[in-house]
Every structure is written in structure tokens, then in C-alpha cells.
Length: 251
Length: 225
Picture 1: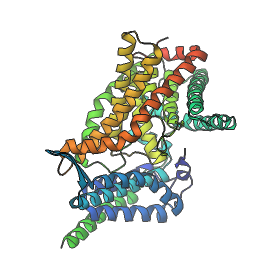
Picture 2: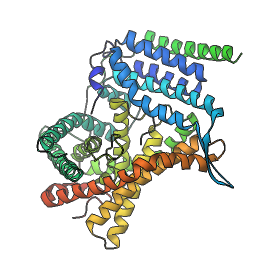
Picture 3: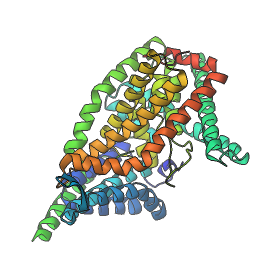
Picture 4: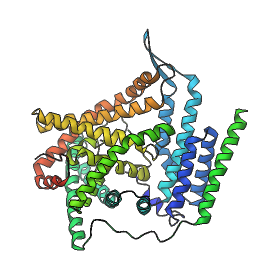
């Protein structure tokens, strides 16, 4: 399991206020859905430039992260070119070349949107979202549970990897039958481990007098006004350029 | 099957959010009640969420050579109850989007609906019905997990077909297209997931009856001893 979280802690904008990054990526994400194809491409260009040049995420990491959704997006877009219909002569399967524009539009939109998601994942540590969610009035139960999920995720992944290695060393994945057996045992052991871990943390927190809410320190910095203004400006510029290019292209 | 970021048009993305919202609100309400009664349940619920996230890294014998892994919705629904599972599933999907670039934020509503609402409720319904009809634990768990997995994929295919109807065949043509793309890989995968879930439940029952009892504090069913 390849988590991209580690890059969120090592990029240049790690300490920037999450609201700034959320506004930037969220706004462009919305624009990539609303604007025509040219607009999506402008979004892709801007987000890529900012991720690589601004946040200084290594290009290899950025491309590899973007490649994960890209495979699914490509297959999905290609499937639009395939036409299936039921007529008098039964099932008719054919190529729909007239759907080229629709498929390209979908491809552009999805890649642009995926780049916004990658920007968020690569620049902002997941824990930074939680105070923001609390500010947005997401019920505190949900935020608390998210906090615990995130904390335990890495422990469980490590545990899983260890059990996986142990099974592999004993030829646990040598046949179909043994693969099922190994995965079944690992799944069951993992749940037991998870529950024990939860009980341990439960006792620890009870001993320290934690109440119905897990308190966390509020964000120390505030979103900078200048940055927020710049973000809004970027939205406007992207929208205007996108629409202008599309108009020029349509002739 | 996760629908990737940006794949759905705005109206569909918003519509699926609206469809999932009642389930999330209901799930949050029952979570609130559990935590009010027992604050420490948060940790158990958090551990359950992390468990479901990590479950998708388990290996299944792959049929087509593609990476195949269980969705875990059936097991989660049987262990933790479907309404809690809706919220946990949504949280897991959000983390999968942010930590693995798998899925998306605008498509989170649609993915929540197929994987955290339809999957768990179908699995739980099948499990209950089978147990009520006197089926053995193994049979009930197998059918519940397989049906939950399969219906999740059918829902995803339906979501895609609705968003991208076929120019000639319309919704039905598109649905047939997406279903046949999935069917090759998903039918064996659903059976494999059902089988794996039975193995997990058997191992749990044999070795960890005490731990399972801890799940009793979770609402709406939970595990039957």
C-alpha cells in the first residue's frame, strides 16, 4: 500500500494554512467540472505548475501519483467509444466514433480534477484537515473517529505487512487454496489486534481523564488575506483564459 | 470500484451526495448515541474504520492478473452493523482519496452510495434473512459478503450508465456495457470475497470469542454469538 502522505510533510508548503490550499484546489476542482475542455486543460497546467514549482513536490512523485487515477480514467473514457444497443436483430456492439468529442471532454475533465486531488494529497497532511472540518461544523464524533482512524492506519499497515511477510516466508501464497487461508487468518488476526489496540488506548485515555471530545490544539496561524485574494484571482484568470481559448478554438 | 475524481458531471456528483446524505445523517446520529453512552467507543469505532481501510490490502487469488482485493463492506456490515458502516465507509473512502489518490472528492457521494450504503445494507439484509431462515453462519456470511460485493459493482455500473448513456442504446445499452466490463472480473471476485469473509469469520469464532463480545456495544445487530 503506497501512501502519499509522507510527501505532504516534506513539501515546501506543508506549513501553509490548510484553508488556503483547500480554497485553491477546491475552486479549481469546481472549475474543471464546470468549464469546457480548454478550461480543464488550463486547470491541469496551473495545478501542475503550482504543485511542482510552488510546493516543490518532486516531479517523479507527482507523475506517479497522477498515474494511479489515470489508468482508470483512460479505461473509462475509452469505454465511451464503445456503443452497445439492443435492436430487432439482437445486441449490437459497435464503435461510436461520433463520441470522440465526448470521450476527450471526459478525459480532460477527469485528469484536471485528479490533478487537484493530487495537489491536496501531496501538499497537505491529512491531520490538518481535521481542525478545518471542525470549523465547518462537521459533528465532533466524526472528526474524533477520523482522528483515531488516521492514527491507527499506519500501525495496522505495518502490522499487516509483517504478517504478510511471515506468511510469504512459509509459502502461504503458494497456491490458491493457501492464499485464501493466509488472507483469512491475517484478516481475523488484524481485527483482534485492532480491538486490543483500541482497548489499550481506551484505558490510557480514561486514565488521563478524557471526556466526550478529543481536544486538539487549534490551528495557530490564520489564512493569509493576501494569499486568499491571490487564490480568488487565480480562479478568475483560469476561468477567463479557459473560456477565451475555447471560444478561439471553436472559431 | 471507485469512480475517479472528476468522472461524474456536476449534477450527478451533487445528486449522489444528496442520496447518501440521509444515510450519513442517520449513521452519525447512532454514532452520537453510542459515544454519549460510552465515550471510549470512539476508539473502537476508529479502530474499526482503520481495519476496513487496511482490509483492502489483503490478497485474493487474482483471476485476470489485475490486482484484486476485497471491499470489506460485507464483513464490516456484519461485524459493526450497516448504519455505522455507512459513516465509517465514507471516512475510509475520504482517506483513500487523500492518501492513495484512489476515488475522489466530487465523486465521494457516489462512491459512498455504492460502497458504504448499498453494499453494507444488502450484505446485512442477506445475512439477517439467511440467519432468520435457519441457514448456518458460514452460508449466511458467504452469501451476504458475495451479494454485498456484487451489488456494489452493479450500483457503480448503474451510476456510470446513468451519467454516460449510450448514444444508440441509451441507459440500458450503457448499463449492459459497463456490467459486461465488470462481470468478467467481478463475478469471480465476489465469490472470492464471500469465501474469504467466511474464513475470517471462522478464524474469529474459533480463536477470539472474547474480542467479538467487545463489539456488542455497537448498535443494530453487530455480531451474533
